[in-house]
Image 1 (cartoon, rainbow, N blue to C red):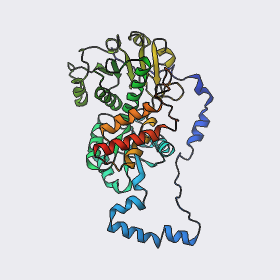
Image 2: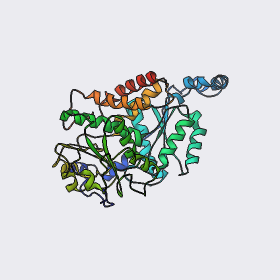
Image 3: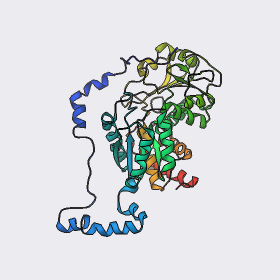
Image 4: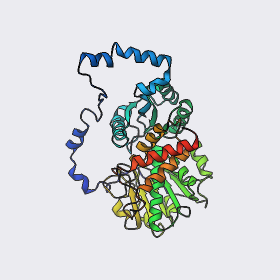
Length: 401
């Protein structure tokens, strides 16, 4: 039995969105969501002589003699590029680079709002792994960090690996690691509310793409011993001959009880459902889970199951949306992670830095936890500074600063 279907989730559009008209949405994107602002006045002839010719030549000569001065006298040291080929955008799939640009602009806006970091979106009109990697190598003098975004699996794994190896700056595919970091924080929060640890939980991950693989990896690293992964054909198990290289490797480290079949077999008696599939999960399958179950239906814009339905059976429910309690959103992670990495001068983002970020996110609301508050609000101003501080400290401790 397949864990997901291709049918749209008709129940996942809550009444709370009815107050937002299509006209209001499009007006909010008119002309794009970004602009460039000056950091120094440019009002007089003197200002012009300093900012441009002839004064700028002195700075350019100095950088030509010592390239490290570019960090101090250009914006590159604090500039994050958000890079996508538009092949796996939200729950919309392969919509192409131009259609993905509003999402990338939004990501850049969040960097500025929550971490004070300059960011620019770059969408590439190619799906070729070599071309994407080579483009970023050639553009390296223009930026200080790379946020890979909405690139389809399994290509995203190779692209990230090769870009990390090629560049001497922080690189992170946020769909993988940002999602995984916030999921770990949320699961720790939910387990703490219930008075139990995560190590004994039976977790079902629905979706074996970028986010599913990364979430599985971070949960295993955090001590969860029983993780079962589902793809569109059922349980990712060693016996299956149709697995790609990434899934075959995943099968060696998951499904410890040797389950076979699909969502029905995986979810029967499970403690946690983690939805990353952009599909629909049947109500009766959530009903078959263990008492006091935890449901994270994170697909955007339509959760795998409507939260109101999931709450009939689960004690804690979270989604990726802002119009329900317990929003598990990457914005809790990526602004602070990149700020912390850049503050520390980190050459890369390590596993220890990711775990530190997850712990910092949960730490913000450690004394405020409840069934409807297992992570902070994405608008909580305490989050990004706490994450940045923890990440920078981890970078220094691991020797990558």
